[in-house]
Image (cartoon, rainbow, N blue to C red; front, top):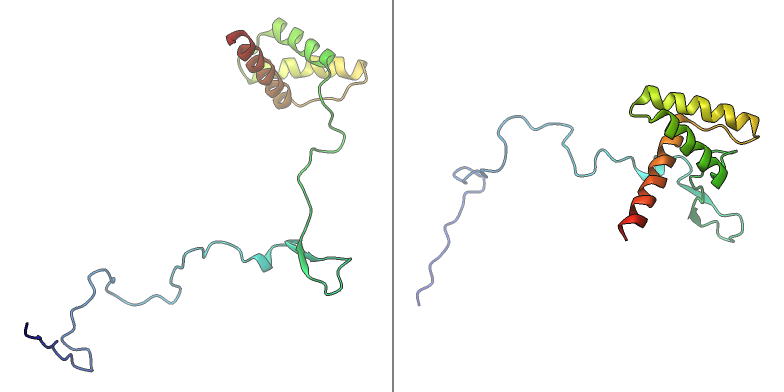
Length: 139
């Protein structure tokens, strides 16, 4: 089989076929790079902190965790019962009705030394309870 020699290309690049994927025009100074929007880890506050008990002060990740706001507590069964009674009286279907339930519940909570709740937390609790009830019935 005969060997076919490859053509010798000129050193100045003239005659070379341009890359069709390369955009024509001026090159930009700020070329986009994958992950360029991400903040480098060194710029984040409290991303790493020196450990207190290590000899060589290695960097370890901080142990901060998201938690519930201070003073928040779980719903007691009595709280849920009262909430369901207020919902049954009002039958909320919009924000205005949920605000009425919120006002009634917080008035009851202040009289009975229970924490005040936001309207959204009451609505979320109702949805959790009703969803659990639907699952029990479906079985």
